[in-house]
Length: 250
Image 1 (cartoon, helix red, strand yellow):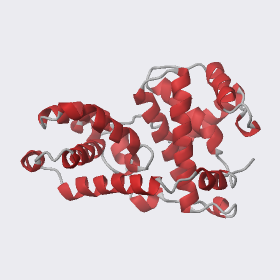
Image 2 (spheres, rainbow, N blue to C red; image 1 turned 90 degrees about the vertical axis):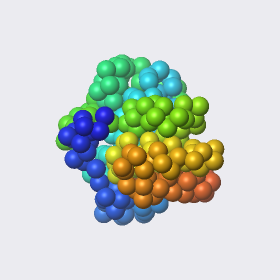
Image 3 (tube, rainbow, N blue to C red; image 1 turned 180 degrees about the horizontal axis):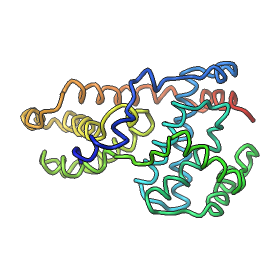
Image 4 (cartoon, helix red, strand yellow; image 1 turned 45 degrees about the vertical axis):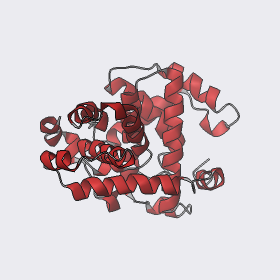
């Protein structure tokens, strides 16, 4: 995994945290703050997950779609690239990239089914296809994404923690509600999830982590970001999310 990752376009596109928490001038004019942008991306991440359940694609497709969506908003404004359209289009594109194709017609059907009372979500196939081209351009046509899942099973086995597969898989799923995949190599995210599980299960894994020769400060910092997210998640109320979403174009 690592050998391929270090030569991939994914590695070359890793960002510093301050490059992720960006709000474009045109968004600021609409009153969108860094906090609003996080809430909007959080909401649209959950929307992608929900839509994916209807069109029945693998978790990997969902994770790739969310990564695309989050990458787009480090490069394009939410005013010009409406998240309500970007999110489902990223799922459409990710399904193609991960060879799990979803018909645009089916996607549009379920978008309308999920958001049956909201006109703002009623997109047609033509709009999905037009946005797909814009997203490809925003991503510089780099569609390869490495995910923590790939390393997770092997690392759990090595650590003698196969009984924690479900717990750590759930933790990895939750990391996509943040921008971690844009900032950190995926195997370090996987290790941070294993570290959290080790602490919670009171399993002594210090020697195993040392043998890996990774920077444990980075792993622990990622783990802290995940735990901090769980704390701040309680503050992500529907009212706050709706207030942020209402700042987007109609």
